[in-house]
Image (tube, rainbow, N blue to C red; front, side, top):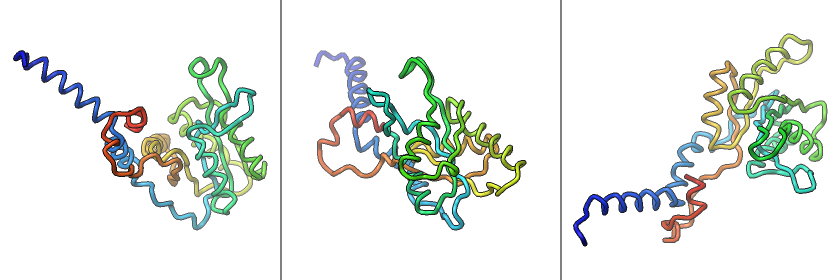
Amino acid sequence: AQGRHGASGLVFGLWLLLSLAGNVWVGGALLNQLEAPYAVDPAFDPPLELLVVLGGGTTLRPDGEIQGGPSGDRILRAARLYHAGKVKRLLASGISVGGITQTTPRDLGDEARQLWVCQGAATTAIFTLPGPRNTAEEMMLAQEWLTQQADRPGPKLRRVGVLTSAWHLRRTMMQARHAGLDAVPVASHFRGGRPVPNLMGLVPSGHGFFRT
């Protein structure tokens, strides 16, 4: 109204950016792009001889007991595949970084192992890989672990899968290829989907920003 077109354009642009970034429809579309290639399970025939499960699926209760975290479907999905006979062995990896969400690091691989044992998985079928702090390190150390296993007597682990959240899987497979790990992608914890059609989806919200 005062003719300040530059300022008006800037405010409108910021308003539009805020509206789009907090829109559950935009966030859902972006997530679907990441998750779509993994919406259908890979062939588990023959079963995977080893499934590498990335850390990050566990947290701690106030009393210190292990519980599933926001990405806890990684733990549940791996257990289901194991009990269905589609996966013969499980390899849990990861360590939390101290000073970010807790004072001291936690062994995320061992936390996953404990939950699998509680769900009836055989301890002889579970391996852990402590130490890696991020996806790149997890893939690199998993490949080193597999190389060491190949030199030992016993069954060879030729058919290997990698399981993580669906939105995270594309980057994980890039890191796996960079580390020389030939693996089958297995997805869990889908976050995309199609929101219920209504005008409320256009209103910026915390959930919309989270999805974006």
